[in-house]
Image (cartoon, rainbow, N blue to C red; front, side):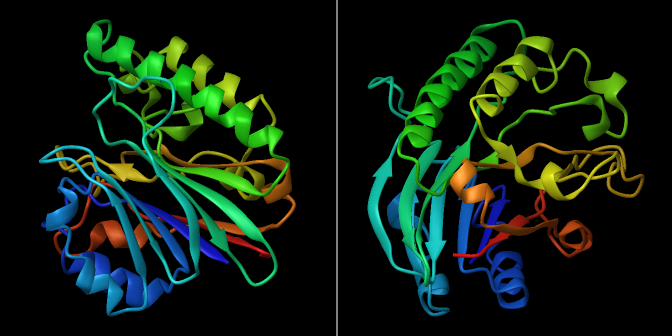
Amino acid sequence: MKIASFNINGIKARVQALPDWLDEAQPDVVVLQEIKSIDENFPRELFEDKGYTVETHGQKSFNGVAILSKLPLEDISRGLPGDDEDEQARWIEATVIGDKTAVRVCGLYLPNGNPAPGPKYDYKLAWMERLKARAADLLKSEEPALMAGDYNIIPQDEDAKRPEAWAKDALALPESRAAFRRIVNLGFTDAFRARHHGPGHYTFWDYQAGAWNRDDGIRIDHFLLTPQAADLLSDCQIDKAVRGREKPSDHVPIWITLDA
């Protein structure tokens, strides 16, 4: 089972690039972030014609997440539990029925949090507390499950080309990293770090200041796996070359394969 995560930074802007990548990469399941579209306006026919079931949790002009799946989906839910007044579309989950086993797939777009300090940073940290609670519940199920998406967290200095440039950014502040570690330390595996070590691995390059040409990137898109999912992990890769194509997102896809 090949599962990918891709922050597309607007479905309208990526209406050609995303289908092209799907044809090339052939993932079974994709979680998308920043679709920036209400559900009714998402071009689902583009993906249904390729064999994908499309489930969206959209929002006008901002945020928005989706799941595309060639495999059967069950028990779809939208919105991260813990705050009934939170109207931002940042969480979607479903059970994917694989050939060998079912996997609970959670797609997320974690708040950026800038400027920090401030209300946006407070929202980020509060959202991460809710995420930790949901993560703990996933562990209690003792079933294969994962949380994938744009975490807007640079876990360590080696996850940035120039860590000093991010030292006061909400993505790398000590409180942000600590909140991320508290989630991982519940018992999750960072799929990419389970397969690759050292610096130089990035999933995001800013559009400004020639960041892509200088490989001035950061790793902020992550797969966190429960122990039962980690036992099934066979690979995790970043499709870096996608960033150099026509009309790219500022993020690139990251994907895993599970023996499921």
